[in-house]
Length: 136
Image (cartoon, rainbow, N blue to C red; front, side, top):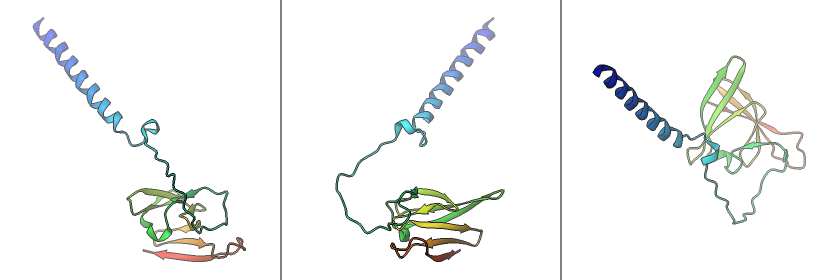
């Protein structure tokens, strides 16, 4: 009888510890959208940006391309992604066809040795760009 009581007490203590550790883990979850802190910058800055592809979604749109660093390439079956890090150590994941940075450079191709970007130098002619290859 005494062993059953000790076993139940042990089970309750373990359950409470697991619950407390789960709760602290859940509170520090970086992917919890409800606990993100947003701050809006009220200062208006006039910057020169590329006017091509204004309606497209842009990864790292507040960062200049020269501040981004390629930190890795992921290939899963036929899909490839490139991981980029900015100066504040934020990680961005982009795939083929995605636009990056203030310059709105389009990611054209990803392989294990290089990444190709399309640079839109002429805002009047968004149909033609210059291909830039970054090798690693």
